[in-house]
Length: 321
Image (cartoon, rainbow, N blue to C red; front, top):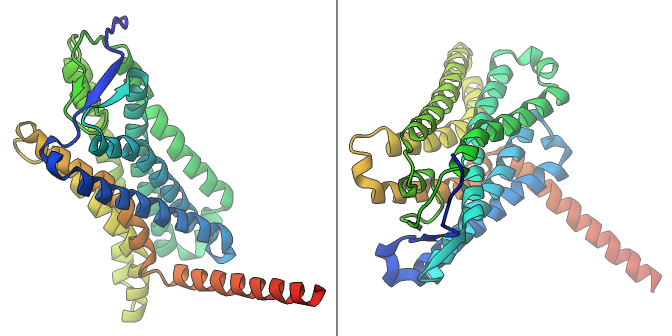
């Protein structure tokens, strides 16, 4: 189809029901955005600084943290604007780009979580071969593959959405450019594209979740065969953070798309989607670091090293005066 669009921008309604509490909503979202950037930035910084954390597991965690920063930076600026302006607009090309990046980052996130499950499987089920299998080159290729596949997976759908004609309607009942509301505004028959998008989303969710479940079946069966209780606890503790993040993400996906009457409660889905987009990137850094002894030790090592360097610098400055 040729792009005969007469629409140059879209209007984002945001959360109309919260119009009387715009300032409170803005401050709440700004706090979530700030905590997400700071928390994920902390993970990136501490892993890059501390040599002991430069392992495959933390390498994949860095990729996930960087992904969360990119993801929230695509979503939150316009979301914050909906709380400030009564009429929030986004240009046509910006809207199409936002759809592409949101779904691409979502696909990359699912793939990264799958690779992290595979990493835990190798570490627990094949510990003697872990360093041989999960070499630096293999980890780089796996992480790079997640990013490439995630973006290519949504590229052709994005091209098809880009070519849709829009003949006047430009009001999106959402706080972001989501593909569902976008297709409903098009003046073309979008049934085939809707089916393709649904099939694409279901396939990547089912495939990644199946691989994660299979990995953890082997992991749990291996842990249960460990003779000592302390050994079982230590082995399982390395997986709890990843399992928590996986449960939150796939639970939100299931709640939004699998429960009955999903199409009749779009406004409720919009709230659930917001909680998934806002809470998950904010909570993930805390989930991965609060109970992680290695990260705590790396943090205090960095603090002591920085403190010692500052003291040495101040001492040298005094000696030179």
